[in-house]
Length: 263
Image 1: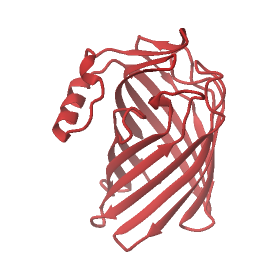
Image 2: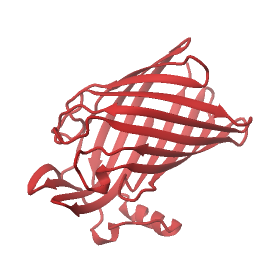
Image 3: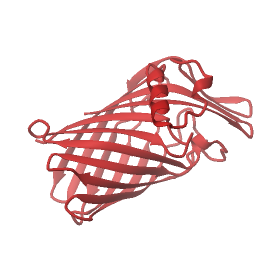
Image 4: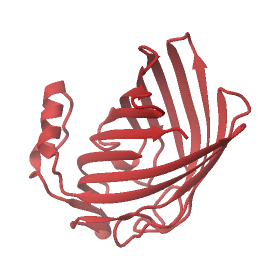
C-alpha cells in the first residue's frame, strides 16, 4: 500500500507559452509482486485525486523553517485548484474543479541475472480517464535497469537508468517527447537491523517537445526517507519526502508512505 501527497504551485510564461499549476494531488497505489527464482512480476492499481491546496499553509511553514525557495507561492491565494497550459493563445490543458478516479494500471516484469543487477520492462494501460484527469488514455512503455553496490555492511549505493516511451494521447496529445530518459542515484545507510535511511536523486529529461518552460524541461529531485523493517511481523514501513532541487522542474514537495507485507 502506497500513499502520496504532492503539493505544488508553479507559474511560468515564456516564448508564447503560459503555465499555471496550483494543485494538491493524492495518489494511492495497491501493488502486488511475485518473485519466481530470478524473475519478478508486479502490478500496480492506482487511485488518483486532485484537490485544492489543503496543505498550502503547512508547506509554506515547511519552506520557511528550512529556508527553502518558495518560487511564487506567496503571490497566489491558498487552497485553490487551477491548472492551465496555453500555447500561442490556444488552451492545451485546463482544470479548475476537483477530480478523482482510477488511474492507469501498470504491469512490469524484471529479470535478475545476479543479486545486484535487474532488467525491467513496464507497461501502463489506458484504464484512467482524460475526463477526470486520471490518465492519458494511451499505452505507455518503459525500459530500465537497476544496480546496487554494497560499500560495507552499513552502506549500500544503488542506481537506475531507463527510458520512458509515453503514449500519444490525452490533453497533451502531439506535444510530448517521443522518449524521456530517467536516472536515479541513491545511498542507503543501515542504522541497525530494523531501521534504514536513504538519500536519493531522481532525474528525467525534457517531457514536452519544443518547450522553453522549466516545468517541462530536465528535472532533478531529492528524496529523503526512512525504512522500518519488521515494524510488525512480516511488514515494512517506508516514510519519505521529495524536494525539487532544480526549482520549478518538479512539484514543490511530495510526502510518501508505503506499507509492505511479505507472504
